[in-house]
Image (cartoon, rainbow, N blue to C red; front, side):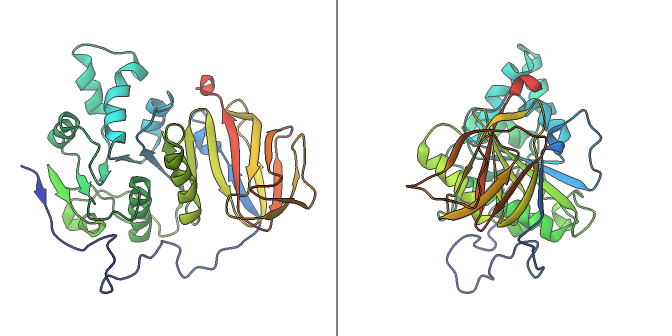
Length: 318
């Protein structure tokens, strides 16, 4: 039997609820000299032991590389309908059929399912509940998207530093706090309060335009987190205000790329691109840098406002 815990009203307007605090609150964050690297996606290279990598699965077509990403990430979250996507796509991704299908699905279990749970199919929910995958029902929060709920959950994990949110068998929670204590059966995913992290969000591009815009908006809402959106042949990240040194992963990224000022006008300078910017003002309704080309192993971008950094991705690389 699934059990729901009635605890805090996460996400609901409530003057008694403490404000959401991200894991870097109180730490002055620099606005320059940022490093943007995709080395964490190079599975054949030696991975940084201080890097904590999260995988979020959304409800759109998944990159074929998702199955390879799975064992390389420490913590996996399915966002509501993304659970259906994972369940349905795994046999095709791995080329399996027959009796092996559910055995393989059992080897690719998410650490948690999060969302308002209006999209997950009953057969899928039953399968993962039977495998002791905790389900976090946040249907009372209609002010944030499923991706936003997942990112808030990761932020909570980074803040607590020592626990994941693995709960007891068949457990359905109703708030992030249900999964933030050792008593919930949590497993350790973080070993240092300031351990570095990367968040890969698959199924983030394609489908309804309002969903895509919402996913892009999440990069700005959670700009203190290192998030890569992946889907439909694109990687999208947010470059902070200041100077960013970008090291594209050769063979995976490019050569096509773009720089887009989604949050307002930006003045930017770049090097390492075919068509570089030189104190160039960009804005939606005016000039933006699309259909550009990476021409160097390093790209440097200096900007007075956050920019979306978009690169084409080749799944054949995997």
